[in-house]
Amino acid sequence: MSVSFLISQAKSVQKVIDENSAEIEVLDQKIGDGDHIFNIQRGLKLVVELEDAIKDLPLAKALNMIAMKVLSGIGGSSGALFGTFFMTMAKSSDLDKDVNFNKACEMIISGIKAMKERGKADVGEKTMMDVLLPVSEKLNELKNESEFKPGLNEVIKIAEERMLSTKDMLATKGRASFLGERAKGHIDPGARSSQLIIDTICKSVINN
Amino acid sequence: MKKFINNNDDFLKESLTGFGKAHSDIINVNLDPSFVSRKNKTKDGKVSLISGGGSGHEPMHGGFVGHGMLDAACPGFVFSAPTPDQMQAAAEHVDSGAGVLFIVKNYSGDIMNFEMGAEMYSGKNDSIITNDDVAVEDSTFTTGRRGVAATVLVEKIVGSLAEHSGSLEECKKLGEKVNKNAGTMGVAFTSCTVPAAGKPTFDIGDDEMEFGVGIHGEPGRKREKIQPSKTIVGNILEAILDNLKPEKNEKNLLFVNGMGGTPLTELYLVYEDACQILQSKGIEVTKSLVGNYCTSLEMQGVSITLLKCDDEILKHWDAPVHTAAMRWGM
Image 1 (spheres, rainbow over the protein chains, first blue to last red):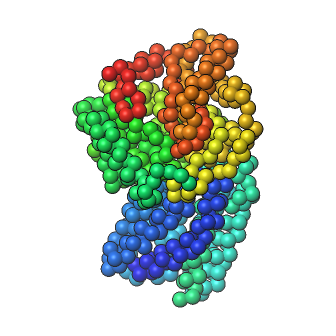
Image 2 (image 1 turned 90 degrees about the vertical axis):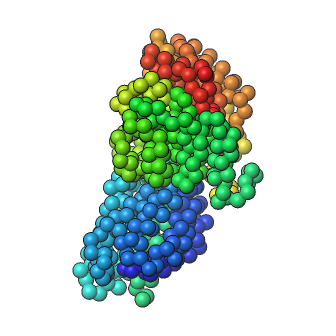
Image 3 (image 1 turned 180 degrees about the vertical axis):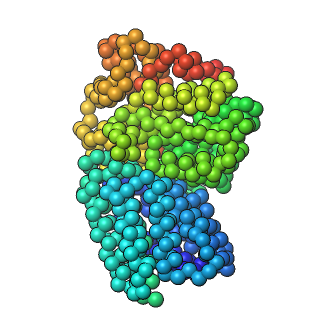
């Protein structure tokens, strides 16, 4: 993981989220209040715009600037959760040394753990954690394997399955929890956006 | 979408700037990070009250900044929680040393961002969470009830105690009592349009209403055919009374709140219906508040809040207040 990796991933993710924005917006209007996609898009735009400011910085500083930008620029649950994710990654030790695949996995795992604590949500509650927690578990298995490409293909598959599994769940956290039975039958918008982010990054790592 | 808007990116900034100019005798507006604060510095020894939440609920919360109510308010984007740096900056700006009480509506995004703001602020602080919406079932396994219109009452009543030298602990205790003594339920006839979305958040038929609606256009308890006002008000009150169980000799404040698109003529009609129904049940209405205080953009609808009042609550309700949206006694 490097600063240029972060910047190029942010750009790819931005493209994919923009392409799927209409779908996510509709999902959020069905079971939320419609702000999720705008928050995610605003956050990605802010991060992509950081390129000139962070491209020559050490990784820890760049991650910290991304965290602050996300935290102060997005708002809502997404801002707090993704801000927490980057803040935790920025606090990892030994970021001045080479950050290899294993180390990057560890950072992502600790970031997702911090999101779980901040949001106090677990698997089965129809939130983005339904995708992120199983992905984190898989990454934990992967980090000791030399052949990571098949593993990342599995991550892609897990993320998609778990995203789809939110469709028939009752929500107990977040705005959708106020709907009771009526939340059933709709995929959680946060699970969908998280799955798209994971899908994009994994594919890019596999292909490079 | 028909809105007074120039471009979406500047929507909030332009509105806040106008708010600052229109009420420059009472408040200042700070941009980047955005917060509204009193024009006069918090006096030494007075606990500072800070609230905030997504925009689109005006006058909540900026309209409640001023003597006898809030010291600062942090507006987020429309229907999105404000960010921790706003809370931190507002706290640093207003705290006179007696500590800060954050008043937070029970929504996941607000809770998380206020928590982070409180962690980032180094001064003494505490928080109260409002959750007066009886439309939502409460359970330890869910997010729980939403914080809605009774937040206005909490801010007014605790604001008076803070003005009268209440300590941080006392302010928190009174705020929790008001929240616990209050129950709210809302109903909407129409959806609302978030400027960034450009179209209504939900579809609703000409003859339908959303019963138990939240304040962000998020759907509520159930969708029903619209009925005469008395029937709707009766159903709302039934849900509230079922939850609050006021005693016959108890004093109550009745708060009829407009969601933004319902005219005052209708709000007063709802107030009259509610008074008659409560009277028939032997429930005494001692204090009143009617108007658009906790809105959902241009949504047509109302919420009704009943607050059980003891002498302490009544005293602080009547105390002088001078804010952009609420003023009496001074």
